[in-house]
Length: 195
View 1 (spheres, rainbow, N blue to C red):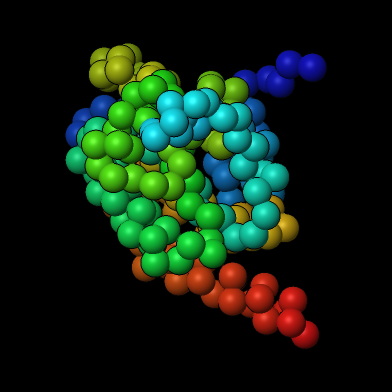
View 2: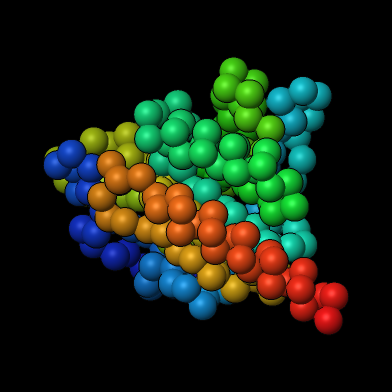
């Protein structure tokens, strides 16, 4: 069954460019929604082998960091912050998502010492994440190859506890809110499991 693609007009901007978002839900992701089916390809930077990753099947609390384009200033800083959190909190899964080719993402990971998976997703998955960009007339056409920058904190049950999304793609995510929420949700899950 083919899902109908809906467009949300003019909600994203960066330095004068206006973009539409293409989505299958008809709205942006919101806290309380379930994580849409999110799958993609991860190329291991060490072995150069490709693995299919189904994010929904990974147990535990997760942070899903959606990137415009790895190799750009804000996305690189976002990836570095996610990597630092990943190294400090290995009990919480951290994944970064992009439309870039898995080989390109593996090269980026090797160059910058990134150990958490950088997953390449297709347009269908991008639409499910409400992250597929469509440049408006007069905007940079390269945006069609990029994703809306957003960060999701996902509970063990698959619910979105935090959706950090801002139309201004020059703004950094609220790292403290994201990391504090992930730690708290993980701690609560551990406490409940012991009770």
